[in-house]
Length: 219
Image (cartoon, rainbow, N blue to C red; front, side):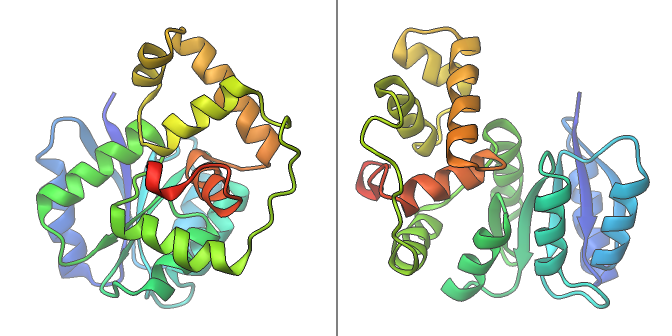
């Protein structure tokens, strides 16, 4: 099944360029285009088939990408969002991570980088470059250091799985490394989501770094 993409950008020429580029890929299908956040939200509320990933421009009229991401993260947590912007600053990156984005893509990125980001997010639930990890460490952690867990709140195995998730390994890679089944990995991952009250894997990774459950230099 192809990766279902929703494109949200008010610049039609740019949006159409991305559309034609993605439609050439056999494992990707663009199922909807939107020019603002309201169109995205309305589509999600009415459709029976959710996109796997939304490429979300941040600056759009009516409802911007930041607010749309906040709503989608709350109401449609199964949908992953890649923030798409011309602004590559710590403030923009940190803000999008706070509201629930799974990755961050600058508009002048190469097609190769965009396709890699889409496939990584689809496979692993998030994709953080070293630059984004630095922002999580330096911006978010310094803002809100709040590990509320006792040392034994997470089991040793859960901590091992969490560390490997943060290293951006997929389920099968984690299973092979720990000599357990993929289904067992999924069980540990679901327990981690429940214990940390994270809605998705991207949020889990941010939470782990934010609360110093894992160290950035080991990722």
